[in-house]
View 1: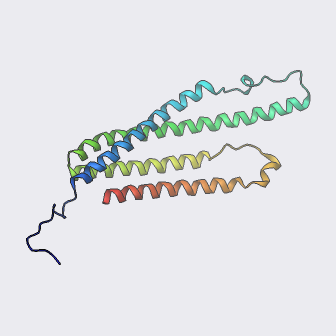
View 2: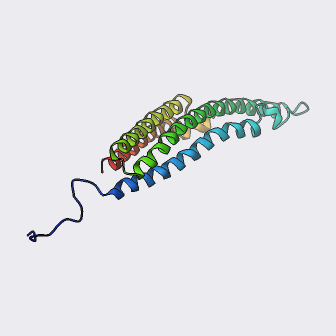
View 3: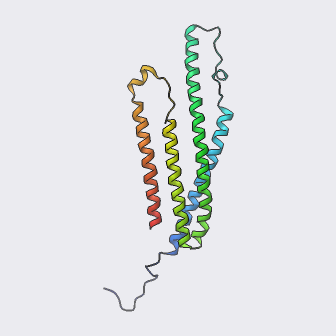
Length: 194
């Protein structure tokens, strides 16, 4: 039952101007988060190069006067260290990619925030849509790189690994990664569609 002469406080065909301001605040928070991702992607390879030795002999010298068992143990550890360093090098390449796409998201986010805050709905929605698209493509790229590299280094665990199905963890991690990318970006599109 409508009251005669009553007016709505705002026209329901237009969203509240605070919708755009709220989206601007949300994008500002995401931009700060992506800026931290850029810093992490740049600093991680630098710190790893500085603190992780390439040669296992830098960690533990070869036991020249040791028993055959100690020498065999050192050779096994050296092989595992080489596999780990190779894996870390590949992961650092992924971190550099992550820093690049996070940097692109920061740039788009820096354009989004003032446009949304001043109320330019059409351009703001397009910029946020571009941000979501870059985020989606970057996430796909990261998951593809991780699936190519592997979710864990490939060590020869021997008979100890038979009790644990490592292939299950790889498959589960891959499915969870793809699910996270899809669900996260669907949520972003849902926020944009409000």
